[in-house]
Image (cartoon, rainbow, N blue to C red; front, side, top):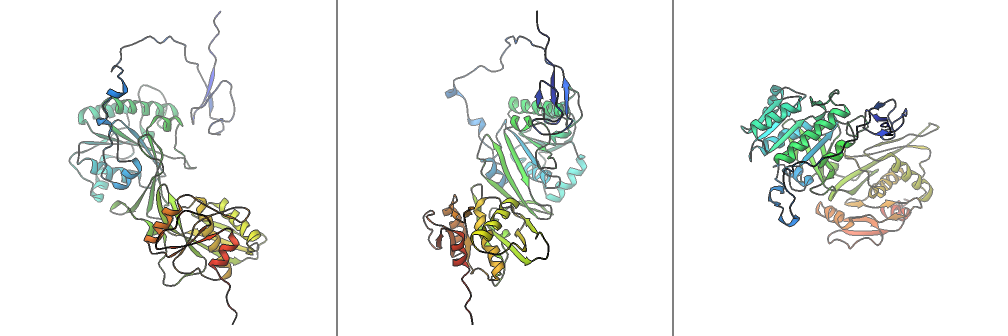
Length: 453
């Protein structure tokens, strides 16, 4: 006697399934989103006609799969050369960060090589035209359409035959084949699947715009990121003009590259050399500041870390950070107090970066520690000094990756001395390296005691 099909339960937020009902999703940890769904009927898959016969891998033509440059060098750097025909890219970012502006620039540049179709589900074509005039992104081969149905998008593709399709955004599109509200798990899955099939069958590069949740993750089912070929994160502080593009997934290129852009009234401009944005130009050194070199992917960036230590009357002194990882800042403060003898337990400590850049790698620890010690001693570090190194809980300064690449960038920008972990990579000509083993030694060398008069 055949067993009846088992009932399954599915999360409406991320699509996670389970055989029994639970109040909290085991994947996205959301409460009250798991509902009962019917089990799919078991069917025997019958063979059908194939669209193209299987070929030996040595006979596959790779000419059509080469990346085509978009015309925006910083975007091509992150993608590994450009967009690939038949590839599907997902661009995600917070509201107002400049996703639509970036893609409109890309569409206008790509239209020089062939037709481009820009489908907007959030704005009218007139609104997009006004923004294009402001950005100077007008082209006779750039076609606009305001649609929210994926079936209508396919009809526009048949009429225009574009080489690049941009859909803004995937959460506003609906498929008439399935039920559900726009942006729901079922609709996002079906729309994405239809656009991926369209891209693969016709060799069209497709770019999807994705919304993000309040915690910064991409809205919709996690399956969305698995289906597409490239996942890009467009980041930036609302109060800063700097924007950074990172690749979280890339089937056609590296995932350790970063693109830097400047958002202005005239559009988005690529920044091939953004290091100067993260430094403060001053005539004399100031206590509480230290310059470091961080690696964003393969790109070294010069950044300045600032710290301010002031006496506090509060039972629990304040610790405020901006642009730095709060956990690592608290750890460095504890190491400074216990291992290096820098008394900050009864003081407020404020630490930040310059230019709105976010520094999260451990190589910034030494610069943060020296900036804090400089503020406590009210003594500035000498001009032309940078600090690179990870600080351990024992007070030791550990080696980090890419020291030579960082030193070359510092030497190019005129720095003459670098405090680095001992036994690091080979020194770079034009910049003196000072190797240290622990944090106390670094503070002693960078901030010598003042002579008494």
